[in-house]
Image: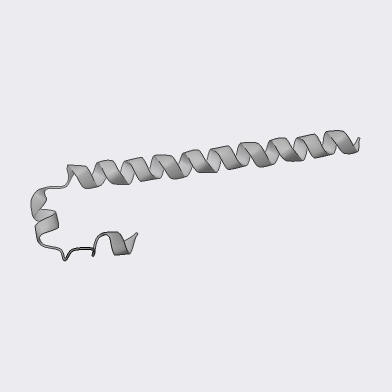
Length: 55
């Protein structure tokens, strides 16, 4: 019984870890794609580092 409980806990931790890593990776990709789609004028009107400091 204890082995099953340990196995289920490991599986739960593993799956939640994988899901959260995938969510973060997807969010990073979406932010990068969004920044790439912005016009150059967006970047010209902001100080260097101002955009990244808000992340």
